[in-house]
Image 1 (cartoon, helix red, strand yellow):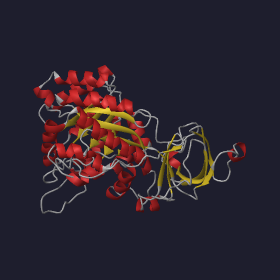
Image 2 (cartoon, rainbow, N blue to C red):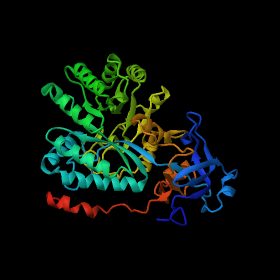
Image 3 (tube, helix red, strand yellow):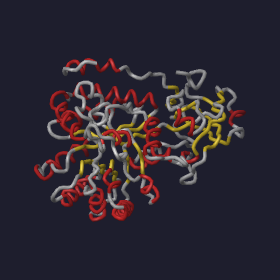
Image 4 (cartoon, rainbow, N blue to C red):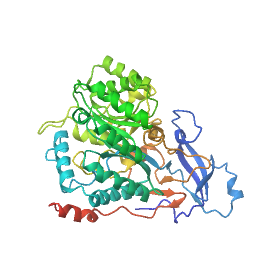
Length: 445
């Protein structure tokens, strides 16, 4: 692939005529939708100057810096993938979804977990996924971790090892994942998993759906997080059934228990199938509760409304435009990668943003929707990322494309990733590296 820079960047660089989204500049007007031309100076791996193109005085002050004219090329900060499943990633070759349905995915993942998720297997697949994300330009990832015993005793220590090993490249957060019904059958499980999550510096998460006693179970989860100082992250109503209303129940539980930590709800698919007045009331509650929402457009487009021999009738995504209009923080993310829940993907947030624009119609105008993979997820998971600012680390994506039309039409165009102003020279890992894990479990590449 064509390089953006003529030479490898080494931490000191003067970039001329860059195009940047105004909404990603520190201290920009909220919701700013302009693309603006800027000059950026990088010194010692940090951004030492951001100024209108052609007005920079830094050029004369730092005459020894390498200079490169981007000719309007787009520049973004590295991106934030706030909802992934690194522990499931890349198992499709050995355990494909038999029919592409949600039920098929649940069954197949459960079988593979029991048969193959050793520490070595989980570690190798996580590392492969992170190497892909790093080359694509992602700097922060939250991953959900299947936490049903005995898998929690395997995957959480592996996650902590991988997080520490990757600390200087990708900031990792872990969120536990289990069905809320487990708490009805095994009430002691909540304290056990919440303590494990707290020890690992993670996030308390669960899958919610309609069941008897849901409100009481949600109260228990919220209070477990509150007493331990944990944030919350739920998988919510991933179905087209309009009777699935656990999204509303979560908002009421957050308000009822006075929870003031960060709360994220993912998927929320059934909201789009409900009567408009009911959806409006739910979104008003969600806004009042201060909950952020992440949509997973590629995965839900793949899974939702799938029936053999029948064309799907809806896109599977939630009401992101309406939520954003209410001031609810919204994001889009990768979700699953080459596993039974989503057979494709590569943890490339530029692909996610491109597909989200098409699936959710985040255009006409494009506006500031780039914030859905940068500043908004960063805020929702509590990290300092997603902006271009004076004194910030020069963690950047440089493109030859110059505007949204060109990026969204050609997302695979030349892209260069800088971390602390230094070019990432690693390449995407070859899928052949995973062949031993696939062959060992009866599959063939």
